[in-house]
Image 1 (cartoon, rainbow, N blue to C red):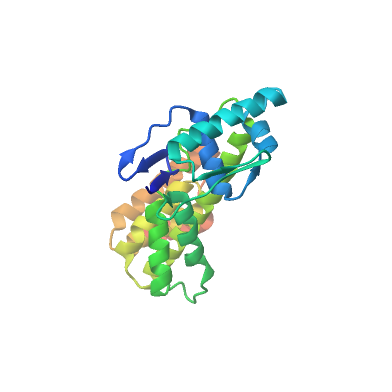
Image 2 (image 1 turned 135 degrees about the horizontal axis):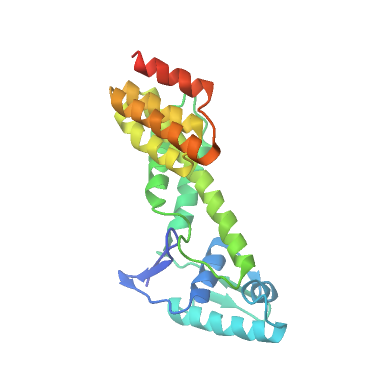
Amino acid sequence: MALHIALFGYPRITQDGQVLEVERRRTAALLAFLVLTGQPQGRETLAALFWPDQDASTARAGLRRELSRLAALTGRERLQANRLQAAFVLQPGDRVDVLEFREAAARAAAHPHSGGALCPDCLKAAGQAVELYTAGFLTGFGLPDSPGFDEWQFFEAESLRERLAGALQRLADHYEGAQAYDAALPYARRLLALDPLHEPAQRRLMRLYALDGQQAAALRQYQEAVRLLEAELGAEPEAETQALHQAIRSR
């Protein structure tokens, strides 16, 4: 039976609509690592990653137990392990939200376009990517006693955020270029939410509000930018941001 493994937000596993209870955080972490690395991992590497404070014998025993739990939870046909390596092999019909996001974001980025306008295929792929990214990677989840896993999780999360930003940028560019400002606004807002201190993103949102006839919203966005920059950096907006504000005020 097909699995749906969701790794955006807190990890969740469902099988044919039924939630599979993962009783141990280490089991979920091991699943996420094996699924996203997508290749066999050495047992010694896994043992050292997930049991860094244990001696080699204890760590290997812990790994054997977790692999057994993972096989019992997801199906033994998915877990391929021998004395040296372990791998998680997806079966036909299995879905992993992060893998689907990666694929959609890559399709949207691989095809060059001029003037910001996306072809129908890339527009669809970028839209699929941003819909799949429902929350940060493994938000609220971690292994306090495994700094190596936490480091891997951090860099994976940053990589996925960068891919999301790229997809949002392409969608905002596309709809702004088509003068569909109301359609561009949600992507611009979401792009800014990734980094509220990024002034080019603040300016884009101000500009889109103004172009959409929402002058009051554009001016409020400027005031919010001023507040954030002062509170977080003790700085004023860049000259370009101030000039855009004046242009919006004078319509």
